[in-house]
Image (spheres, rainbow, N blue to C red):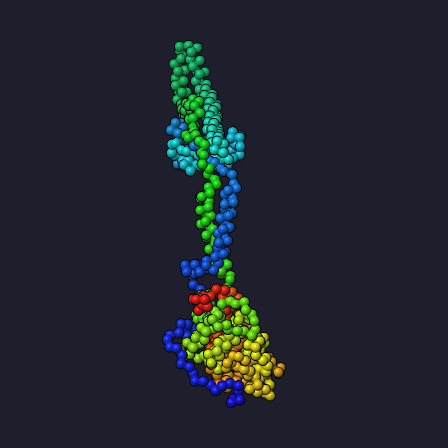
Length: 562
């Protein structure tokens, strides 16, 4: 190993003391179940999705305002009618509650009948909407009230319509009551005639006997009178039910004739209690009320829309999103940069440079807390989450402090590390592990202008084995062990965790894992699955995560920010 292009290992630096500000070790059994949303959660969702909430609220207000201000004004007017007045209650007693209920049900049916509705519309001369309120209709209470409420485009028309409906009811109710009484009178008079005829027929033998008595000699009258007495006693039993019915019929006839006389006044059955008056204030639309309701409903819809969209959107945009439910601590937050030049640079004083200085400090804090950190695997759940650029920049930042750093291209499928560092692409890791003729010395390439930074590129596999099989070999651990003797830090740019198993093999020979995530591109479900894979494999613990591509730095102070 003395021929390796690496200086002899420096003694371990004395790390800063103090408690680390992130979890020391990721818990092996994480609870990924989300609790019910708190007010703080709702506030965070509304801040994130403010544009959606605003759009829903504004759309609701605009829609309600459009409907409100384009609708024609509607005016209401009411007319009330008294039924079952004291006079009519005495005239038409309802008797028991059961009978009263039947009568009131018949009244409700009458109000909904085609006859009444048709005559009322004809009387009003329009088909405006009219509501009939029978809420106070009670046959056992005198008086009871029916309210006719008309909705029309003008106050005067509404009053005329309500008045027409009320007048129609009063007139029609009087006509029906009078017709009922007259029909009952005709029926009773016919029944009276029948009963009188029946009585005369039964009494006919007595009449004949009286004629005989009047013309009989005195000697025969005594016998005829005795016969009449006997006949009358016999007929009394037959005449009793007829006379009883006649009494009842005559009594009801007297009542019905009195009703007919009283019904000469149309207001006995029902009368107008309050005439309809034009109301100058429209009942619809009501702009202030409608807009207030739209504000309330729009706010509810906005919150619902945000919660619904957020439940399907698991993109990780901030450190809060990552740490919620995972227990991971953030090691650094790297702001978004448009600089895509390669090889990459860490401009002094830039926010990107400050972010990686913080990442260096996080690694040092891990050492102070007793967390193994010499060999770090930098990986990500999915491709395209800045793992290679994170590994390259971290290696540059560490080497800039005079440390001995080896960065290994562990992604044998889609290597990008060499291009990012401007280092040679071969030979490298794949060459060394697949070809015994290749020595370790020739696979290590010093990165020009980067101090003590050495790169071991991914290279290429020279035999027929696949990347996973190559990385599973014992030679990988042997290479790492040999490099440990000469390096302060060994960084492995590994492949993503979910598409392939290569990263799990590299995690087994690493001291800790750093998860690289990219804001608005990384997904919570993918992160959970990746952490679960590391958990199940019993690989190195997760030191924390680096969130790149943040549009606005979460901590900023001064021109450069830190």
